[in-house]
Length: 349
Image 1 (spheres, rainbow, N blue to C red):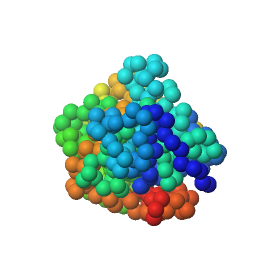
Image 2: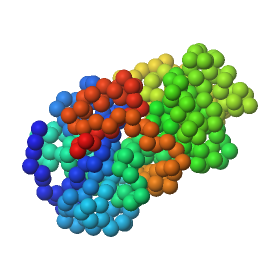
Image 3: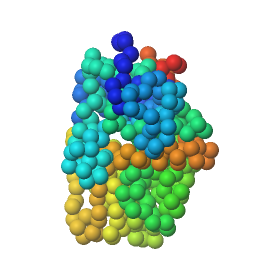
Image 4: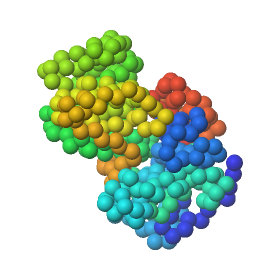
């Protein structure tokens, strides 16, 4: 499908897409639509990207960190807007803006046509936070800042981590690997649980202190004992769920130490259901928090982290498949079937 490039309205930006990752939510939408607020049929998809500014709308002179911008600069943008007017925004919880998704997933027939990043161009709307990419951060790493890295960064800080504590990470996909790296830089000891041996090996390279294989410990009871053995019999202080498997939530409640803190990120669809024993929350006085999206400034913080530690962790090994726009469906299948940790779409590939 082709469209004439739109002229950006005041406060908007037209960018040329340099690189766009296939996110798990893209795969869910491709399979039938399950993300809140995103149309299931003919809609623009893609949001985890880096692009080059082609045209600045009237009034746009700097990014949301105050850095001057001009055509030719590379930027990333939060995949949602913050209206500033709804009750959540007025409380400073921009991650919960009630109008966040008014543009995400709209029809490619609807102006401005380019509202998804699986395209040659992308339209950054007014009130959509964006940030300039550091000159020293390559495209393939900058694209990963949004949304998974930023959401993990925000989710971890919602746990209020203290150096010396222990974090259990459920899942060693890209989000779990990011969590291991960020937590390690905060002085947190990490334990990663997953069923895929290759992912657990990668977790070690991302700084995980311990890994627990579901192949070696196939039952919950065995895994619970393994985690307790690694934490002096008490359990981890914190846990973060990034599996997308609803049953993992119940397991996380079992693992946590008394007064533990739990953030659920991966299981984000209403269709996912599992048995839950709320007594674990009550008797252990657990704090359980759901995280969807992130505060926009975490996108900026993620860029800084990736730039600083790009040579310390094997971020590039995520990009095990680079494809052109004509191979988008193939990339969706590869990610959906877990043949790769993630795939990258490069329009000019």
